[in-house]
Image (cartoon, one colour):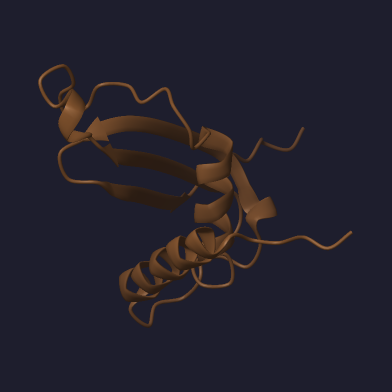
Length: 116
């Protein structure tokens, strides 16, 4: 079965990848277990501007899992080697007057247990 990525998704992923490259700025890729926090801020429609405010929960499409997939696909091989490194993933969707996506990727501290 052939998979097709919509052009809008490809464009979005390309923009996220560009910002990831700028954020890394020649640094090294993250290693080990990672924590990823994504805040997707969706444009408040003019027709709902009086009813909605910045930070209100967004409960329409796109789905949170699709947002996370796009962000992880876009940052893989730039910020980290493989998205299987993501051990913790938080995705928030909010309404906003200025749309954007905030993606924070951090190495998780490894917990070592003392030898018996």
